[in-house]
Length: 110
Length: 114
Image (cartoon, rainbow over all chains, first blue to last red; front, side, top):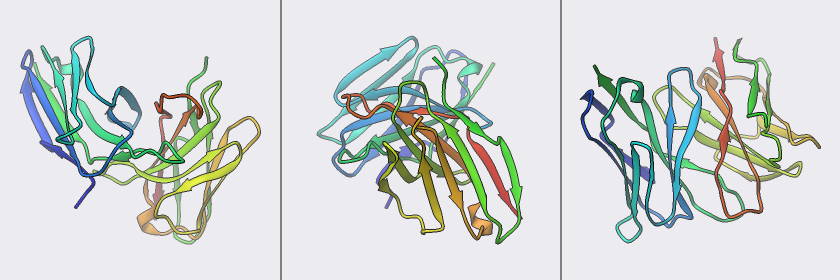
């Protein structure tokens, strides 16, 4: 069983829809990260959080430490939001390595 | 402030060959991590370098090795290439010693092994 599970794996939405991507993890973590990866490979960090909720523009990330669950929400989705969204966590310790989920492929249609 | 850069962008090698991938960390960062991302998968941690020393390693064989230089740039070397080594190789830089664990990723090197 993977340490990080994301759902759904694929998501197609119409422009303007509210989108939710879920992430569950099975171990203690130092921080939970949400990242975005566009075709071609580049990865951009969207959020890093260890408790509560963070908002940046139309993106909102929440985490429930007790339930080991995090969600990424996109409000008023737009075709330019189409990308792979990846959940990852830092287990802590000597390195700040990231343990990644497999990602959610989001396609927002106009 | 310059971001993380990687070279080359693409590379094609044959089985058994050796390859060196390069990463320049973001200005002010002293830690570089390398990840391997197979098609359709999330990145997998290979190893991390901090102040020119290996500072943690994932489940990769010894033919994956690395270096970090005094300017904190880094190399990933893979010997005896296998077909399964075909992947996108990502490096990420960060600054160890602050509360933030945020990592900044380069654009990646896509390696194809034939």
